[in-house]
Length: 289
Ligand SMILES: C[S@@+](CC[C@H](N)C(=O)[O-])C[C@H]1O[C@@H](n2cnc3c(N)ncnc32)[C@H](O)[C@@H]1O
Image 1 (cartoon, rainbow, N blue to C red):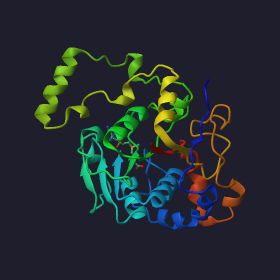
Image 2 (cartoon, rainbow, N blue to C red; image 1 turned 180 degrees about the vertical axis):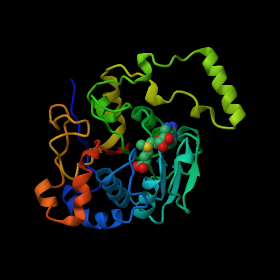
Image 3 (tube, helix red, strand yellow; image 1 turned 120 degrees about the vertical axis):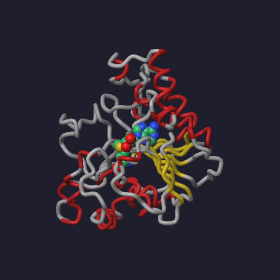
């Protein structure tokens, strides 16, 4: 039976503790290096990642999906003592570079993660298939994972755990026949990768471009393998979603927001949460068994 799952198990923080941290986060957010982070995280998810990373206090953080670098700055500020490895297949997009972070342009799946501990954390914001990423984390021994792009069933450019729980599958633009994978194209890509000295995965279709048929087994396997699944709440909920339709519980089941538009509007320091409220996409925390 199809399910809306917003939470399984108990996350290592209480719902009440979230609201208490809003002002401390707002002070930091004011100091962010990039004022315009279009294409990257805004206040609701920046807050969520900062809050969860601080609570988890990891020794190692792996970030997959850097874009301009705002989230790398956030992770460094959330966990000043953690070792951070930040990955993007295109490092040339960075506008902010953190001096104490190790950068890589190799896909997460192509690294040697043999030093992972029980406290290490992976933050995925790379728009890849979340189920494949979860399987890779299990293989490498990562227990704590944050998925930024946890899109609801009818939205988004990748397969998410939220979609898996709803048995929704995923239909990417790629599978609608815009680009065809042929043997000649495959060989061409390999040669190109060799000539450019880059890893072939940079040129191969990524998991975000692979169709997933609606199915029940993905949800079952996620449930079997996770100890905790927890969608972090939006700070406030607006009438419309980022896609311009009604933010309706039937289409977009959502955890109760941290506060209300009326309450948050009383404090001018929290203005960004109002301005950027629709940037929420059901970000979630997962702890693997
Ligand atoms: C949404 S942006 C990341 C936003 C960033 N975390 C922020 O909040 O500012 C997604 C990024 O994922 C990168 N990307 C795509 N495929 C990737 C992969 N397989 N591994 C790592 N990064 C990837 C893209 O180049 C892009 O920079």
